[in-house]
Length: 75
Ligand SMILES: [Zn+2]
Image (cartoon, rainbow, N blue to C red; front, side, top):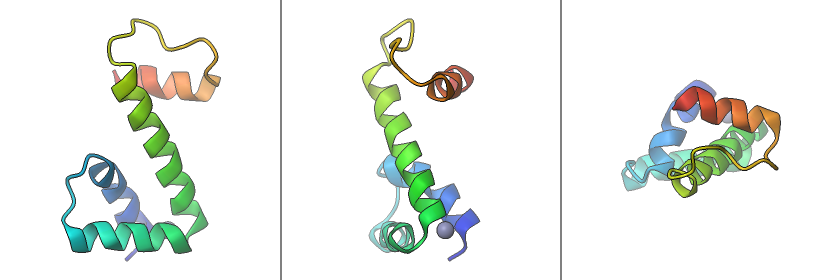
């Protein structure tokens, strides 16, 4: 499976929308590929952040700038 394909699936994986075999492909690839592992971690962090902070008008002040920008863009 290519990195592009994996990265396209990561958000679906994190939403729990992938079937077992596909989820396994993503997990397997992320274990082997540093680029996708990084992407996976960033996405996982952001998705948790977005879920936990859905009711907040402002992102917490102690977040890195880059994260705040990403959150703002996704609104
Ligand atoms: Zn990869």
